Image (cartoon, rainbow, N blue to C red):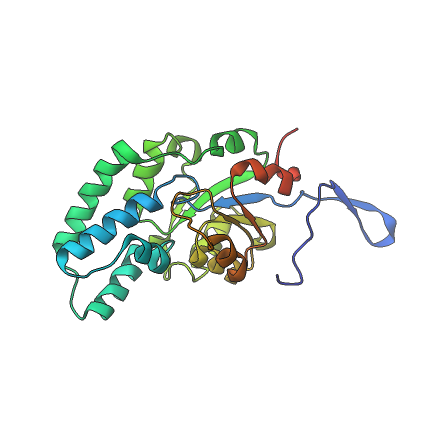
Amino acid sequence: MPPDLPPFTDALSRPAEGGSTLPFRPWPSLVIFDCDGVLIDSEIVVCRLTAEEFTRLGYRVSTEDVIARFAGRPEREMIADVEADWGRRVPEEFFVSIKARVQQAYATELRIMPGIVDVLDRLGTAACVASSAYPEKLRLGLETVGLYGRLAPDVVSASVVAQGKPAPDVFIYAAGWMRTPIPECLVIEDSVAGVRAARAAGMRVFGFTGGRHCAGGHRERLLVAGAEQVMESFGELQGLVPAAFWG
């Protein structure tokens, strides 16, 4: 962790020079949630469909491979990697088919992450979303589970920045959007790329392994990437940052 970041605290004031007390906001003053695999249990669905479509078109890859290589990264970067490995362009058929299949799967398979509604109900600090998903998919997922209305307009897609995760751009943009200093931000991330992006942005980050795509060893990978803590469920969050919650 960068040495200049503040420690966890529930305090509402701190001593200033000369012994006086200055008010300050408890850390964190902003919680930045990733979307896929954090707010919605979508990674397992999308990665399975992606693997099926690539394999059908001749680029053989498993669901586990897609999770390991591309989870948390923007689609445009996944496509660039596949094309470089495959030695050919991904056909337009892929994009048409995957969009239709994701829409259908979201309507029947998508689940909201257990405990997130309670967290949002009791969170006493600002919150926003910073995701690698393109805006239409991001909105579709959040609307399907009933979260878009309560989080919009503070929903940021990496499509608005130059580089996706693991570059820090989307998190820096989100902090600016929310007018919050970098050291006051806490990121909740399920992917190695996302954890690295948060750390590169100078933010503190908790890993999350509550999604169905998080197989054995994922907790350790998030810690190695730089996560301070790793949660298996959102029930753990208040105990880790009590100052961010009401009551």
